[in-house]
Image (cartoon, rainbow, N blue to C red):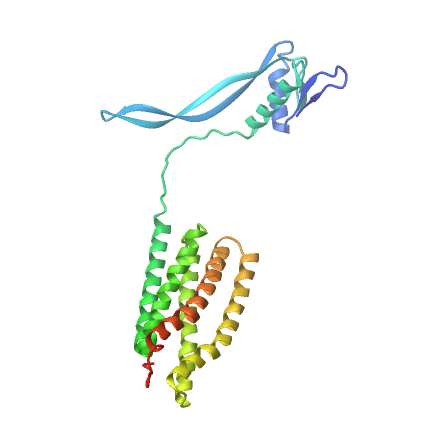
Length: 291
C-alpha cells in the first residue's frame, strides 16, 4: 500500500509477501545490493486479427502478452517478507505503482481455448409452449361455455376475448415482457373470468327455477352474484399485492399480470357480459332463456 515515509515524509510503497515469497526475494537480492531492480508488469490479453485460413481471410482471437517495467529502484539491502519502495516522485506515482502491484498479484494468464455463443433458444421454446398452453386452455373454455350455457356462453366467450385483449394492451402500455410467470398469470386470469360468468349464470338458472320471469332473472343474476365476485377478486388482489411487495423477479411479474387480470376480468365479466346479454334479450320480451 502507498503512504509517506515517517523520516523524510516522501512517498513510499509498503510491500508484504508471504513466507515463500520472502525467501525467494531474500535469495534474489542478498548478492545484488547496490544494483537496480525493476518491477516487471505482465499483462495477458487477446486481440482480434485477420489471418488467412484455407485461402480465406478470417478473424481470429490471438493471445498477446504485454510486458513493461513500472518501477526501477536500487537495492539498498537484502529484502525479505516486508520491505519498502522509496524515492518516488509523487504520491500519485506511488498510488499508481501500488495499484499495479496489487493487480499483478491477482492477475492470471487467460487464454481462450474455445468460445461459443448461446442464443435464447431454450427460453423462446418455453415461451412458445406457454403460448400454446394459453391457446389450448382458451379453446377448451370456449367450447365448454358454448355447450353448457348456449347463448349466454357466446356472450361469455366474447367478453373473455375482450378480457385478453385489454390485458395484453395494458401490459404493452406498461412495457412488460412476456415471460413464463406472465403467461401463468394470463392463464389464471382466463379461469377467473370464466368463474365470474359461471357464478352469474348459475344464479340466473336458480332464479328461473324459482319461477322468476326471464328479464327479472337476468337482472337478479347479475345483481346478486356481484357481491360474491367482488369478495373473491378483492381477496385475490390482496394476495397479488403481497406477492409483489415481498417477491422478486418472476414472482413480481406474476403478481403484476395477476393484478391486471383481476381488474380486467371483473370489468368484462360484469359490464361486458351484461352489455352483450342486454343486447340480445333487452329489446324484446323473452319467454325462454337459452342457458
